[in-house]
Picture (cartoon, protein in one colour):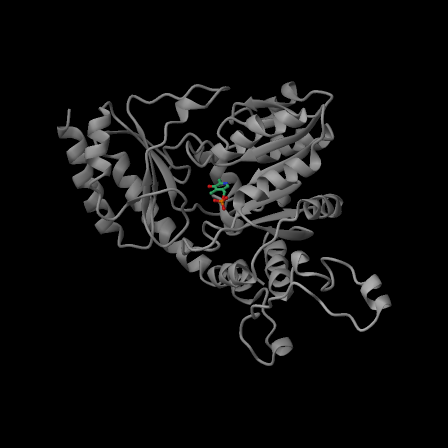
Length: 386
Ligand SMILES: *Cc1c(COP(=O)(O)O)cnc(C)c1O
C-alpha cells in the first residue's frame, strides 16, 4: 500500500465494530476479567488491562502511526512535549550526557536546562549543521543525541543519516523530533534513528483542537521506553485519539495543498525588498535545500522570514494588523498563523544573525493569493514605519 492509501485505511476495522467506518471512542478505567487467572495473564499494552494503558481507540492509532513511520511500535502520550520529555526522563540517569541541537524546540531545551540538570544529566548544545562532526562531541557518558530537522524556529536541516551512523557506532541513542516533516515526508527510522516523535497537535490533528504526542521506536528500545513511561502515569483521552485519527484521514490532502501554498507565499516573500531571507528548505535558495531534497519527500507549510532592518514599532505595525495570520503559538492546523520569536535570546552553540526581526509563518488552507495580499500590505506598513 502506498502512503496516501495507508492514511485512509490504517487503524480502521469495520468488521470488528459491526460495520462502523471508524474505530469508535472506547472509554473505560476498569476492565472486567472473568477469572483471576485471566487478569493475571493479560499483558498491558497488548490486551485490555486498565484505562491508563489504553483501549481499542489508542491501540488503533498507535498501530497506524507505527506503520506510517516504519517503526516497531508507537506510544501515544498526552502532548508533543511529553513525547520528548518522557523518553528523555525514562532513558537518562544521573551522570549521563546528552547532545541537543541548538535549533531545538524551545521547551525541549527548557526541560534539559531546568529538569535534566536536577537529575544530574548534563546537556551540551551543538551546531545543527555539525553532521558527522558530532563524533567529536560524543563522550564516554553520552547516552543520547537529540535531532530536529528542520529546526522549528530557524529551519536548519541536519544530516540525519550521517549523525545516526556516528551514534550507532558509538552506542548512543538518537531521538528525532519529526513534527515538521510529518510521517508522510520523512521516516527517521529508515535513516538509522532509534526514536521518532511527533506533536500530533500539529498536522496529524490538523484542526488546532487537540494536544497529543506520539513516540515510535525500534524493537530494541520499545519495551524499555514503554515500561518507563508507564511509571510516569501519562494518559491520553479516547476522544482526542479519535480526533487525531480523523485528522490523519485528510492529512495528505491538507499537506499537499498547504505545501503548494507555502511555496507560493515563501517564493513571493523571497523576492520582496523588505525581506532579507526566507528560511524554508523546499526553496532552492535555502542552505538546507540539498539535504532536504536528498532525504525528505516533501515539506510542510511552516517557515521563517528574516526581515530587513526595522524597529519593534515597525514589526508591530506589520503583524498586529494582519487580517488572515492569527498571532499565536502552535501550527499544523487549517488556519494561517504568525509569531515573532527571537532565537538570539537562548541559542548558545551558534549565534543567530539577522539584520531585522524573524517572523515564523504557518500557511493554512486559505487561498494563497489572499495570504500574499495580506503580507504585501503588512510589508508596506513595515517599510513605512520608523
Ligand atoms: C509544538 C511542538 C512540540 C510540542 O507539542 P505540544 O503538543 O504543543 O506539546 C514539539 N516539537 C515541535 C517541533 C513543536 O513545534
